[in-house]
Length: 575
Ligand code: MYA
Image (cartoon, rainbow, N blue to C red):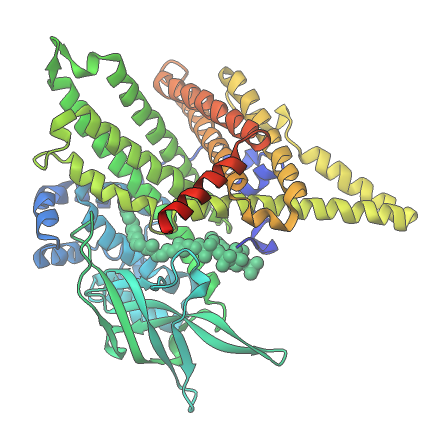
């Protein structure tokens, strides 16, 4: 892990933060997406909620067939498919709005429609040929075909490149024959369409290597599945193991280029992670509503629970984190809708922050409900079980923190290399080199954070803007120090990578919330924006405190002895 291609570096807001740059023109104004073409879908989902019995879905561990049919009839499988193929053609923002509502209908319903769209058909939408789209999208939009994304294998989870499923070109070169197995495939029990990843022998410069390739595979080509898994939560969704034995796939069903399938998988997951984060907004909001409703009715010591300060703390924190999550997600989806190409880091940040916000909110809501929260008659324990998976799938939060940290450090390393070559040219060819070095140095100085860069943030946030500026400058210095200290070995420095990732998550949160509230103040005035201003102020000070703690821990920590404790425990328990 650790390589990030140059082509992706150009337009990423978060990568720029690592180099000390704040792309303010990208950040402001905040895209207030209060209404849009998604309104009808959202309204239909609010009505749909009345028809769905989540408790029963959880108990039966399956979606009733008639509910699945209703979802198809409502067009819930075609939300992001262009209208010309029979879908609603929702934008990234529209889809996020829909996922927010869908998860409030039921988690398993959201996972089923979400896995179909966020990852099942996304590859076809992004990389499909016109012929492939014409052939499959209408059936996928109507739900006649439900889609699955088949990447994970028994021995390949986080290390997605290590898949063993193999695709071999037939002697007449008309088909690939796929053999292997896939694990934990959402919708796999009834899907008809699979985006399957397999290794293909690719010969380049006389050398043959196995390279990941993406395929569109229909069930009728020979895909089989084993029995449904028994899960902790999202029980109504289908999760199975796939068996691929001599599955014969026509060559025209290769998705993207042969040998370029890993990029296809990662690109799909970038959008999937954002779908998940938007679902987490909905789940967080739903839990807040339940908990606040409960706490305003329930009395102890003659007071309503909402009047106790510790309960207020929980409610405030739920609101602050969910508001910041929303701000991050909709800033990111806006950029996607604007055509920004590289949002891999932003979507990973949203997934990590979203799944942890959702988990904390459900946990706090359950705590507010006390003993009742633990009982099956109330919705909290089911929500807790349903929310747990978000920290794991679509990239565990651990692997995504490494991805965020390493991707950011890659930008810093690239800049350091540029500095080195500018310095070298200064010494080797002074006449030519000086111009190059001067140009480079002024560019770099100009780009480093200065208060000028954040002049668009509302003046009432002067203190927060300073905190943001200081945090960006410190992130870029800390990242440079980590790169210089560990060089190539940085990939193994997980404690530091986690700290760096957490700093960047907090900074992105600050950027998003300051952007959103600045725009709100401009449109509604300071007084009307009091609630949001308070949220921004609370989040920025919390974020700044965490950033300072992480920066300090990069310098002073107990990593070495902490690792030794873990090693001794492992030795003791595995003897
Ligand atoms: S599906 C299964 C999910 N699985 C994963 O997410 C796997 C996690 N692993 C990885 O992401 C990769 O293996 C990592 C790379 C990151 C570890 N965008 O050398 P490398 C490029 C673009 O770092 P590795 C599921 O769970 C990179 O630049 N490019 O690779 C669904 C380089 O390019 P180049 C990327 O060390 C469940 C190349 O790849 C990205 O092997 C159902 C190699 O990179 C990227 N992100 O490890 C969910 N990453 O060669 C349903 C890497 O050009 C949800 N690269 O330099 C439905 C919705 C729910 C709603 C609601 C709920 C609340």
